[in-house]
Image (cartoon, rainbow, N blue to C red; front, top):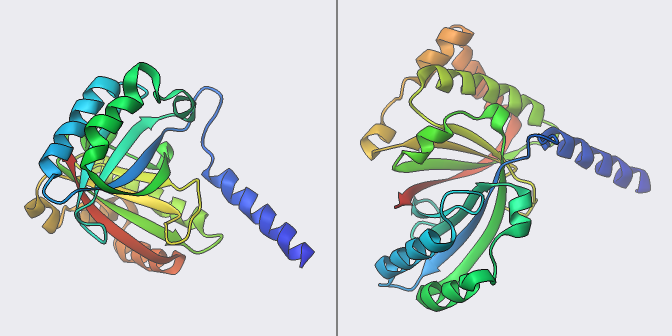
Length: 244
């Protein structure tokens, strides 16, 4: 049993090493996602209050924050307050009680909230991602929270490297990969995010398969799908809109 525990710890450290991307001159970028359910009938006032709070305390910069609404998925109807993209260092120095930050949230936003949900951290894998600027200009995005089979992250990484190249070549859709640094039950190991602007656009073939096969050869798309099914155990998806 002791030997098994040691091996498990080693495996965990190896996975952590695979996820780690930061260097002394390039810190990991991350977001903090907090689920919030406003009181029924107070959605418009809640949105306005959060936007006013963010404009005052979370403008562009290391403490930037914004609101998203979950349109479809298990948490449809919830909102997600997203802090970031930022760094771990900025988490340490984020505004709390200074200059009336906590007091403002307590008095203007909290009275409109029915309940708070989970708060999660997601680290951006910049090496596997493309199109953050595209995402910022989009109306919606779809996000998958994906559970991987243990030890198969390297295969997931290989898939994403090829997908990134396809989306990069296409140049119209954001494709972002996020790693989960805090393991909890029922939350994926990684997340994949795609941007879009209308549901009509989302419902159609975006042509990435053709681009992928042009780069990797005929039949490579099906091979990728087979590989995907072999390395994943499950996933859940959400469609979110930007509240601007």
